[in-house]
Amino acid sequence: MAAENRLSVYLIALGIVAVGALVGSWLTPSSSSDVLQAPVISGSMDDAAPGPHYALECYDCRIPFRVDASTVNETNLPICFNCGATNAIEDIPTQLNTVRFESRAIQELQRWDEVVFEYDSEKYLKRVIGLPGEEVVTESGELYINNQLYQKSLEEFDQLSVDLFDSRYQPSDPTFSLLRRFGVRGEDEGWIYTLDKSFSFDAPAKTHPQWLDYHQWNIVAGFVPPAPRGSSSAIFDYLPYNQFISRSRLNFVDDFVVNLELKIFQPGVVRLRLLDVEVEIDFHLFNVQVSQSAFLRSSAKVAPIQWEETGTAVPLRIGRLDGRVVVQIQGNTEYYPMDPLIRTGDFESDTLVRKTPFSIAADEGVLDLNLIMIARDIYWLGMDYSSDRWQAAKKMTSEEYFLVGDNQPVSRDCRHWGEGITREAIIGVVIKE
Image 1 (tube, one colour):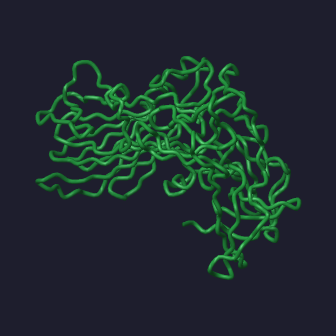
Image 2 (image 1 turned 90 degrees about the horizontal axis):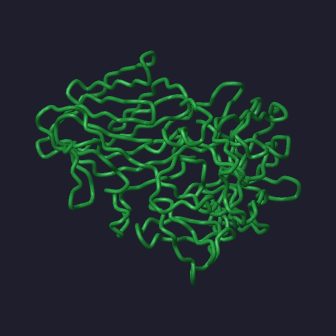
Image 3 (image 1 turned 30 degrees about the horizontal axis):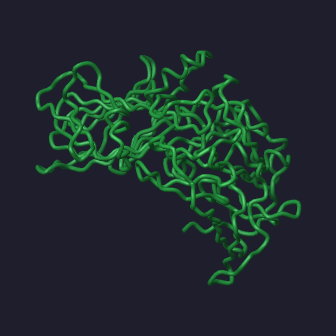
């Protein structure tokens, strides 16, 4: 990941709220004596557990999303993260969530567990980041444990990721259809936009690679200067829940994962680009090749696929994640080495190379591209909410855990308290529904 340090890019200030106390004062038993529930009264753990919020459905693309009820109003209306449409909040009630957690003693906590604990006479909800005996460092959005870059698995990524785009939810306004968000290069005619609002590739005879480019839209609420709907931008560490909060800077996020559903009728070679990384999947030879430069290339065989005459569904996940390229084909996952994308230090230049974070190409065969979903990685911030290198004041003792909130730009947690939380202070682990 890379930080973006141009101070003139900021959000309209409604006041940044440093959020610490998350769990309300009342605790009630659930159906089991070992299970309690409590209200979530602030948003430091969104997306996992939002505080008081508006639950919206975008009027244009119909995707559901949530926004902090304290940061939007009739003057500053929420913007859909998926299509950029401005949505009304009139007559929409504020919602309050509760969390259920097991209160019985737990033998061992795991990294990424969501826990309820007591600190300074308050109850909090945070996530386990550091375990006993570990040193915690954040830098340029990455997490380091004992001076080693922590490399998440794809399953861990799914617990912490932030959704960016979902092709299942398309604007009804034709001005902002997929034809505007995706583009082909030159006079290539292999890619077709179908009547069911998806893309197909049809080139039975081998040709050159024909690219279909995805353009990231600027969906930051309160971006200064204001960005017209549908304008291109980079992926930033912006959380759609935090609409219009004040931040001195946004950071480029270069780690993201793309979920695709292909239906292949005639197999060929599929290429995918993730910024400066190219992945080539040869469905004839069942081989994957990953390249980032002339000096960084990797390849591996993949499990053969039995092709069906009526077309074969091929789920595919591909992404940049913590110094690795992840490729998952039909549930089989492989990781390949990757270098970070270098910044020039010039904001305009660094933004330009990130406006098309993902592209897909084919040079022969027939396939349907039925689903495109993109999510970014969490971007870790230090105590001052910047991307600068930050190190916890001390190593965790044998009884301490380092706990932080998912909502990095607003959460107050162990980064600020200067100490870990003892096992004795942890009341329970949140039960995932």
